Length: 307
Length: 252
Image (tube, rainbow over all chains, first blue to last red; front, side):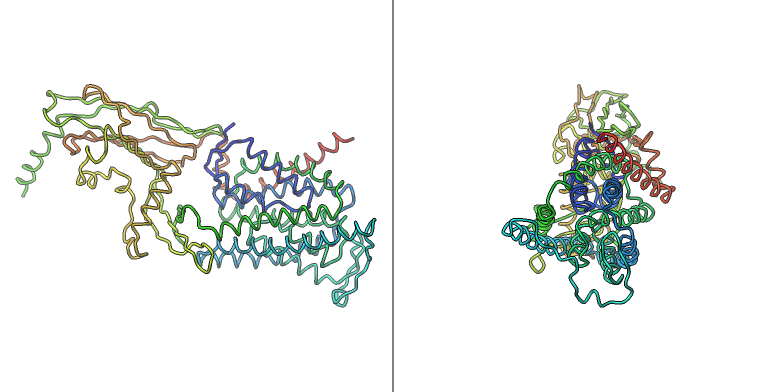
């Protein structure tokens, strides 16, 4: 069934979009990532203009994150205190990010900047997560049981002031590290047009030492607000949110997210992390390929005046 | 001076007045609704004559359909430090979003360069690129690239031999408008040619507009962007919650 999108001004197959939304929603629910880093390139691929793809992708991520966070809420997997601290940092970071984005647009290199950010951050985080989770999976196999997990690893993080109690995470740490992590995620999401879950999840696990049980829910909680903010900003600044496209993606996405959350609960934390790291690495390699391999068509046409 | 002008007109007019186009289209407006998947427009007509057709060169017909034009930026990727990045760009003042040329025969044989330039018939003559050579060396490559990219996208079409001409009088052609259509006025031009020269021409307009739900969403997004953005968010929130609630019901 063909459907004409009023803002993107292209005609697309409605079932294809529903399917895309479903797959990304499934991954989103399973891993606690918003799925923005998948949906945006996929929309480019089917011919949606980049500006519309970024803005509408953000809107879809809001829906799938809400669906996911509600599922996590029932299993008490959301640390609201931590989420709020991350969010405050996130808003500050995204304000700086928007400023850098505008600067790079003026220099005419925003595409390259975005692609390099994708390759760099996805590649780095994917590789780190993959290595760590394979090691811990092997270790748990060798020990023949669950790995012994120390509740508190004391490091320099614990020496910082402004300590706060994060009850759901069982942590008593300074608010500075989570606020900084939130800020860098906000910065990256403004530049890359993603929720930032793929950075937030490993940062919460490895840097803050939060238990995996609350990581996904808390990440989704933060993503709702960051992508919600992005959606409204895009709608006001560039009128590039396509409601029709968003609705189709959302319908597929919310169902996928529910199924994904249930599948995710059944998998072991290490397996989950290996799968997520492989996914992140695949996207990173794909984008790196676009940069390294000579494109078939060297020229591109963009309607509108050069900045 | 005036006499010279009259004389000039007198020379030019007989050929132009002898044969006149009478034409029609299957539709003069296209509605883009939610299930819009392209549209086919039949353009037909006849040649009205006061006298028998002049002997010699046969009659030829060219039909063009031109979508609304915008400025465009054409960028070229180059390899810099091992990676392919947008390096050079050229700004083109005006390029139509859609352009189709349907003819009775090969353009080179039926149309002279002078009349092509005067009437702006082929796509190369329609694209305006004033002062383009200042911006980049070999700017011509960028215009060729624009033509190539848009031809690949199905936006620019040359339909040589696709106008049917019967007994030098009746003609018809079908022009397919693609699904990724831009809103606006589409200009249809009809040309009669003899001996590679235009002897009569006519212009018509097809209005392409979004209708119904498409119109509503588009207008809301442009006129009340904040409301539209918040509405999109609300839509996302309700669907997210709805799916969550629905799945809880299924499980219990």
